[in-house]
Length: 169
Image (cartoon, rainbow, N blue to C red; front, side, top):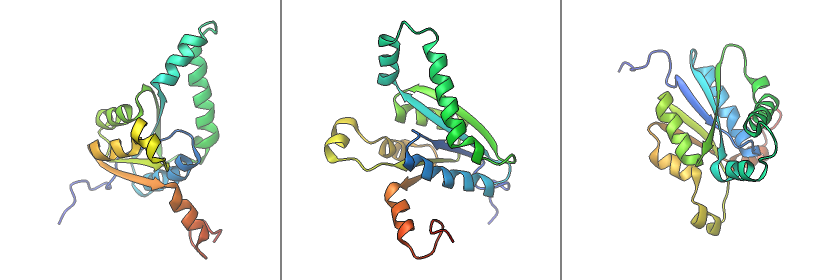
């Protein structure tokens, strides 16, 4: 059976980050998939939650160029955490949005027509999940493409293995 996409299964990979340790762990999966799929594009999406953005706009109005300062801070974090790890042969495009995380992730996935969304999963208590919902769950349920969810507990499991990708071998 001939594949419809001869260049690779994932031409457009969307990695979503909140700059947490779990997102950093999930990044390694997104980057490896981009390396394994020549000519693919790795999009990195960071969404500033709308409520946080409104807080900054409403309460720090006396600082000029708040939006520019926030974007600069995010760019610096991006450089420190991810950009240095991306080899020159991987096409990379950072995207920043303000809004509801799940909504923005799904919007970017549709706009860019991505083949895969990669994101980490945080453990949430049932009370937090009941009140705020679960971003990862919403994205997985409504995504127009495949979704790779990397749980933080998997990183711990890999560390406990006698040999493997995180054991220093």
